[in-house]
Image (tube, rainbow, N blue to C red; front, top):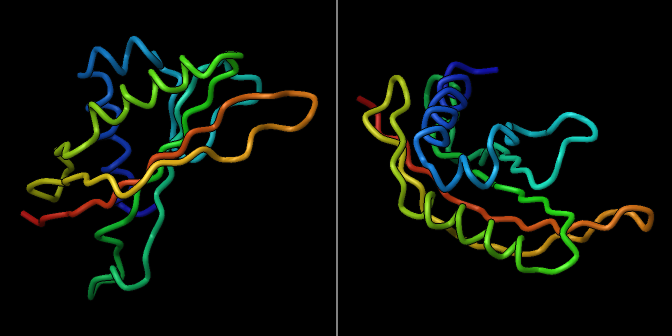
Length: 137
């Protein structure tokens, strides 16, 4: 894992812990790329999506897309829509403090429902994508 990604994960932990609405919605049920098997719903997974054109001269990724996946097993869509609003309210135009950078800014690019789980287990899967802009210190 690159230093930029390690610093980003640390900054995400600090940012989420500082937002009471995110803590209320997800507690500690969030993580990079995956959750533990049989994690309690709802939970939030974020993924660092790189774009080859954003590589800098030292081969580090500087402007990745961040995709949030929100999972809910509630039968009605109310919970997933409330969780989506919570994530958007906290990450739209957010700025994170990441070691080595003056700011990391988020700009939402889209959101959509992904296909639900297998026949034996139905759940909601909502995705939200953000472009990020890293400004070096």
